[in-house]
Length: 351
Ligand code: DCP
Ligand code: MG
Image 1 (spheres, protein in one colour):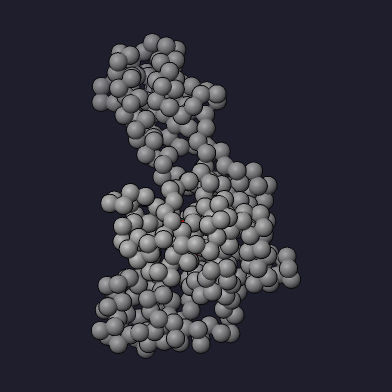
Image 2: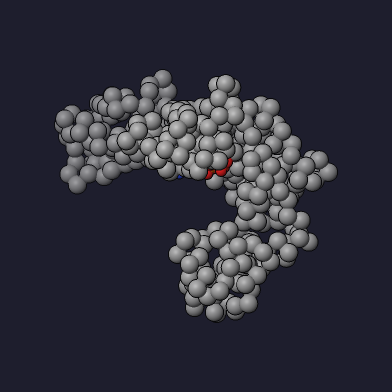
């Protein structure tokens, strides 16, 4: 029997802003684009939610619903730090931490022996520690599977915990609306309604074949979810050591001008990929790799240089001057460091 905790910070970006401006406590606060015409709300405090303000709502509309709404700009760096601090706390209980976003993670605490191995007590301690050391509140759900833990974490939000003990799963599912299941969006929900399927219990009346007939492959998943079965494992992300892009050229590059052009295009690609990286990573140490037309390879790496186009141009120039041969491939990249990788390495010697 697994013990899974799903942990999700409450109004995360807004909570970090309020932590740093305590005079905003208790007020309707949103984070998002400020321009009245084009701005969009990213998240808002629970006080603002009482007025109907929601994430993804245009700021102009939000201000109509709540004229006193205070809209603040984003500080991604602060959210990233808060996210790392939370993960460090999670890792004190288990190496099996699977982040879903900056403020959300699954923890498999089945093997954790702290606090008499009680997942609920572990969740409470995590909640208290995050409040003390990060300064924000989180909510948690405790169950024997990922999807039930996630559904549970929403029940007592904000600053709440909800545990579904295994013996209570049948009664929990009996009344659980189908829309709470992951993968059941508006369209599927509508279809279910037309079939008279409102709760998980209603779904159990259908055979697997019937479910697949109505809902395609997802029907197979539904068959298990409505019975409380979700065997997906909590899978910690592999820690990446570097990120890079490379290109093999149709015609070998021979002039400095060609190298510079190549660097520009590669850097754009690298930048896009770095922006999509998980928040825990900090790109450091640019490097470049050149393959010459005789297939020899040279790598140039400079720890002290920033991750800029200019750095890569210089690295490529340096590499090219080593051999003075036509170049058939250029790769550029950055080594990655993460605050939590040291901690993970200690707990998981296999990494
Ligand atoms: N976020 C975003 N764009 C979205 C939704 C969210 O940038 N469309 C950001 C802002 C949130 C953060 O991600 O603060 C976490 O998202 P959640 O869905 O967990 O929302 P909150 O933490 O803000 O609120 P809740 O208390 O409902 O979890
Ligand atoms: Mg959240």
